[in-house]
Image (cartoon, rainbow, N blue to C red; front, side, top):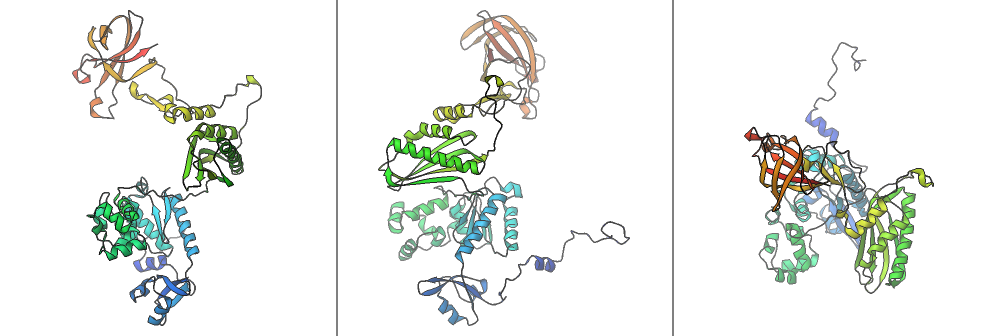
Length: 515
């Protein structure tokens, strides 16, 4: 009754701030079964005949225990040590779930990093959460609610972010782009994710920090510590790209064929591709999906992987169409000494359900599907060579047209007359003779050729779009349709209205041709 407002005493505000101790008590994770606060605990892994600590709680670390120490030594140092079996499979499953949650909620590019970390590509996404710092604070609060501690580093390269998160001194580091080398200078070499052999060799040569590698020449550094060390250093500083393979919230459709003997003839490869397409169409139909991008991967016996990629302008699972497109690109496949396995993967797909088909009578008026034709033309001429012209909401002629996808529906065209060919940029005219202010020119020179006008119509006045920039605040164009003695018809315009100097300098330009 009080919540419905039918009692006289005021109700407490439901969202008032709680006391700090009360809020901390509500957000603190509850201890799990069998856990005793204030008692050091370690997780162990069995390596052969001995047990090794894989991770330790903060209290155990303060008491001198560390990962890699044998469990027998740890028990000898601390009598009441809580020793438990590590579960790497469960840890990996938790990381996979967190990566999938990140891909669905935060950024489409998320991946698992090592045994206890996550990669998150925040490019173009942090503005949705109020900036990088606010996003990191939300991420920290989310992990704390799960009972996990977290260290976050945001940098321009994955290598620098990994190094600062695991070996930096701050729990949250927001590094400006271009400062990676300076920020990593005092970190140990282990922050570069080097192999144990490289770390042993570096200790032998007296190299301890990352800054010790900066002045060294590439050749001697690669000989002493390995080529992988040079690559890791370049990746951390941004000289070499380090792509992140993201997790997919939905498993991409995939089919595979492995061979008892390697194949290499065009006929056998074409037959295998046809069989794979048949299998893939069945998988797509079962999942009600259509392919937009299909990747063919061929594993050669020398270890190299050949790839062919085809794209569809519309989601499809038409077997004949997919086989035809792979046939157009099969010449780019190099079998080498032989192919031992082939795979078809659909990284980009869309829902595709049953559609109503047209009647079999030719006079039904059903529109033909142009997607297969467009896909084949795009395979030959390139995807950028096919487009449609559509209108855009703008009175300025060069801004009123834009290119759209070949399958997109163009918007309505303006009712006023426009030339069939519009120059990309208006070209200046010279030698113009015209009666001011509202008459078309009598003669003009364009591209070193003189023209005499016998008929004209206009003007059509178009004002500048003042909201774009200050130069178009008072800009005016007066367009005229003119016909010359040769029968050619042009679309000209004059800058300015012929009265006010702010509207233009009265120069003439050619902008298009009719017919």
